[in-house]
Length: 442
Image 1 (tube, helix red, strand yellow):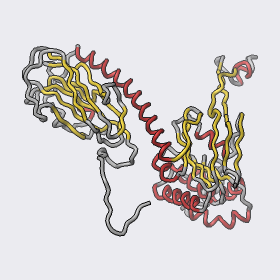
Image 2 (image 1 turned 60 degrees about the horizontal axis):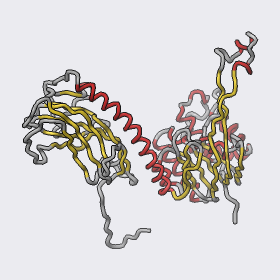
Image 3 (image 1 turned 120 degrees about the vertical axis):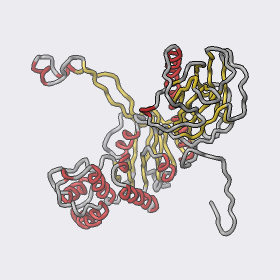
Image 4 (image 1 turned 60 degrees about the vertical axis):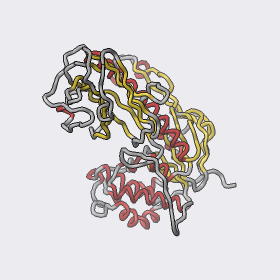
């Protein structure tokens, strides 16, 4: 069997964080007789990678995902030979070209053409090979008008374009790609991705890191999921990305739960304070669209007060992160200041850009009010919430049937919705496809 293109066994990389124990850990401290070594002392050891093992087969497109600080860039730098591991082994079989910090070795005072020659030599090309590839490099970069200008006059996007053009023309057997494609215009980004696809089609090995999960799913055969420097999962791209999305959703849910705890405290404080009554107010069923600055967060005449708002899952547990299609319940807790026989409970669902997705209330859904004379909870349940991936805000209200607000709370809570499918828009319905005629699918 052919040797793996990249193979890591129990790979670990640690960094030492230095603590400053005196005011000056500088030349001044040395003059004062403190010395550099006494001014700074070793702090804790931070594990960027811990006991990481995997293998990448020749011709495979291998993705790495994980949150910021999970060790992705450290791993890429180890594979590229920029860093050395503290323990474990890493075998890289083949010529590597790293698209990590493109243009980092460019000299600002000399021209793009001269930098291409120098950079090419640094990447292992001979002078004759560079001269042969130079016209193709310049054409790919799209910088023919500026190639003889000093690099210090280039924009960051032009740096990346020239750096990518040089790196891609070294004809490596292993291409290591970091988040460099985020810089540059749309046309050049497409050109880069097309080139990466061509590399894959030619049987080249690609080691790929990006926060664009759709791109990972499209390009990668297998994916490594890192969490705090350790392997959380490795396998089929769709399976690992689904696991990663669930973890991200759960973390976002925890964050939103903390935000909601603050909101509930604001609700309690607002319940005891005078509430502004705007000249014109609408119910969640018929929202207006003034700017965020024009809209107060809470208003009403306090005939009834909202004391809490929560989002619940199908078990009744409070939760703020869901998957498309799950059961979702919004709970409104309220109390009247006096017995009421004219009252409506309503909700409004909005995007974070303040676009109304849906608004309804008990009056619209045919519930005629009879008596509201004490603390109560009202639940509205969506048996299969088909919202697309995104963060959504919930407005809740208690008002009269004529629309007079008793208590309206804007953005009383928010929740996160994630979907395993990459649908566009805020609606993600169940659907079936049917095909007739001369069309086949793998």
